[in-house]
Length: 352
Image 1 (cartoon, rainbow, N blue to C red):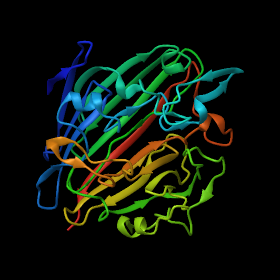
Image 2: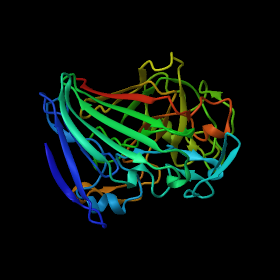
Image 3: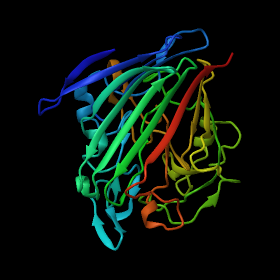
């Protein structure tokens, strides 16, 4: 189903697409930012609740700064000093996060209008968002044609694939920035969630959250989520000098266990005991940014409910931050003639 969700200040109509499966799970996505605005899934009693943070209207997304539900590009996460060299040419991007470049800049993919086309596939309803990012947009080289496809299946999964091609060597690292609270958006903090992450290493960062270039094991640290852990217990142990990425909580790139290129495998499983909801994340990406909403500051979201610090978590499947400036990290370069393709799956279930 397609409905209007308002107009941008320059008069562009924003369309909202509703995907629904036979179990009542509902996902809503819109052409502004290819944003996931709503995701309603059942608890153990079958009661549906929206589990992603966001806003009730377009104005909230136009004014918001937290990237709720957004498609992030061209480069998710940070690039040190907004600078990189490609084929001998130096590029300077906007410094919009202190001295660094973050999430494609102030006019990244989450701030732009996409074209959309919906369809009913043999696996369930689907909508594909597409746009041409012109050469030089936000400082990046190459005309980049991008697609983001959301598919809701009757197996209770929401799948997101990204595709991109370019006419000039460029950087690509797309991700989705949804904030989850399995008890329901705006219902309280996430301390009662239990999380397991299939990562055996992480990339330590400096004060600006830029990787130092080394990759260290999670064993023996607060970042070892190889077995399910209660977030409350872990977050109570965080100290100002911890390696969690922030003294306020977790904000760190977790290096997933190796798998063949393009092969999807488990990333994380999150369980919320009160509702019984379980979220399982799978992806073909090499890493995931684990973030616990450290900088949410109580601004109102859906239904006017405030979103305070630690009211949600993010699991952003991605390549490593600042990869272009670290030759030892997995490559984020896309060449003409190549196709960038990634796949992330969110699977929903319940436990008694």
